[in-house]
Image (cartoon, rainbow, N blue to C red):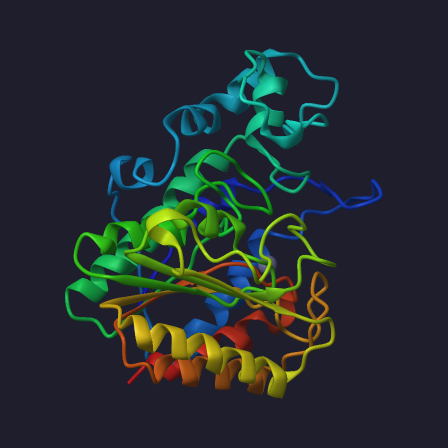
Length: 341
Ligand SMILES: [Zn+2]
């Protein structure tokens, strides 16, 4: 299986994030996650790891706002120039309540406008890392159009919380959305998001499009991040009406219940009959994940992969979350190995 991975992610390594309640903790979305996965991928004989080629900004601008990308590109330099008390990471403390339409001119104003929470911390290497991550997804998409049955984009930072013009949930550029939009020029695309958290960014980007089916299975936003989006009644809008589906899960959901929900999601994909499948593969559904509340086992993750692979679609697998670092390697292998035949 072709795997696309860039070392550039290491340049994005914020020193901390802030949890609900104000607790300052070491950044959970850290480079060690990739090292665990790489070690596992090197242990098996069926993986070939490639450096991604650069697709340029056009496929990224197809799903993201230019002024937002300009903000990401210049934020760090502007942050240092503003002589902050603690320069270690750009993290705003004032946010655009209900997305007021006026964009402020100041750096902290724009940061509060373009960032949704206290986990999308910006450091010197954030923008190049986000670009390289998107290129991993684009290279994996290209590989399946060239005849690969599947390809894995080992993306860091992850992407599914990033919307057209905002960062959040450790995400800056929506890698799965960039890949899906690029593929949509060649045929209908379905995105299946199995990360523990609702794929709010992906939902927003495609909400009014009927050519890209988006499905997210996730912890119910009534109790879990991202809190404001990902409810079952959100089904798309305009031409996209009926082409978005959320499958919210209760805390404590185990393998059997999860797989039952997955079967409903897979039925929707079969009916849509896409040419390509993009999978937002978050491993934070795992029972021991520090950010999760559901209880899917490694074996369950393997079965999820097997059922998705049984769709028989050319599949782009995009890495999203997963913070039980010690288990990440074996969980990813359990998932990916189903696509390797
Ligand atoms: Zn997640």
